[in-house]
Length: 618
Image 1 (cartoon, rainbow, N blue to C red):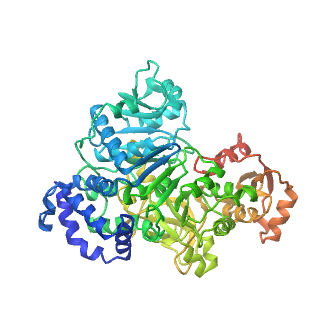
Image 2 (tube, helix red, strand yellow):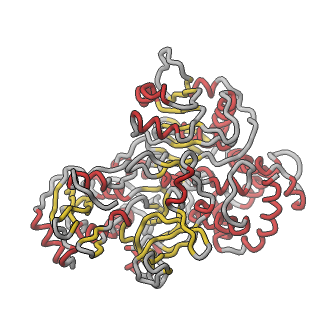
């Protein structure tokens, strides 16, 4: 079997791989989060034996059904600390012992519905305990979960679901009406499973009834990481990506092979998950439970949220779930649940910082250690203000960390507090490549860039080397490039590396403004305007111009209760160092800028307003 061959190759490559700093750091992180050497030995024993018999001789590992090893990893953790809190959501509080029972029941229920390895159960849920239960149960039995954006409606919803032709659709009762509207258009869906609400005679299954009617015995195990996020979709139907298929390939016969040697691929996997070490996983200990307590606030269907739930899945962290984000509730939960880890988009931090001072001063934030920020550009002023707030409210040091990545690449760069404490200018970067390889490519000249040269950002990671778009396979060529005989992922971003390898993003290729032949980077203008005390957020987009073709226009959202005029904004830009073509030709004010749920401003929607009936680039 492929997986048995993989294990033999892995064992040959392991000594060199384990010398990597990332591998050593991950080992320390696992040991600390599992509760020390004694617990680690127990978990390792259970991983390879299922809790039965003796550990196999290393030379016999290649003969093992390795697809059974990783599920044992998950269950071995839960069996080792069954009383540790696993999931907290409003009035629900499950220990790992209780979670194990529910997950095994659900896994058996999904198999009873006819789901087999590599088949799909689409998930359309609000953030919830059921979301994590479904991902764990599906992973155990090798079932894939395309995570559907619950904002979609009608034809767009049906087409998105149909990309993966799921056999089962698991959805929140709040979305019953929308699901019923498109039910006849869903290709291959045989069963509907509803979380919450009353069935009222509807032809569907109740999630809780399914769980209660099936045993908590071990199902037929075939491991595959279930998480399959969608990507794109701002200008059409999104693509579904196999973000974590890379992890599954190393230890399963189900996952698709990478476009790389196994030895190289293993190195990239250690790099990929090293962010758990880089962001302090080996040093974070709740004083009561001794582990990471992660607050999940961004939508679980969003790829970036994996940085928030991965400690739960891989390290036995406690996951505290917010169904929907609220800035005050965010602070309250950090205090109440002793949160020390969270993933956020910049707009979340902006909304927290915009709260009245008396509100922010009310909460003890001393437990926080690592705030991981990504999904959109974060202004340096927001990064600094976040550290100031949390340190003022008890945190022992800077908490802001950042990364650059995508649904296709996973995490590539990492920015740590120590980086910008050593050199303050680095706070304007998104970190350096620590979880993969990254270079800047000069497209027109066909060469790699020197430090300081702005070009295309190219990434190479474990997930790009195994990347596929199930249901849209023909679209892979849109982003994979072969340069000097190697495969690189082109995310459509522009940026440059400094002399120390830190990445500074300047914008997206498709958002760049070409005014009379001059390239203008919107992000540079946006960073200046965001310094204005009255500005909450801004998007600089293309405005048609009869002579220059296009010029920048600033679309501004002010802080609630504050005022500013176009003249004030433009004068501020000049005082802050913008000149000539970099000064916006116009400023428009918006009560609220259009956003995706992940916090990104929908620039295409803004531009549409100015280009009606006119042709534009891209």
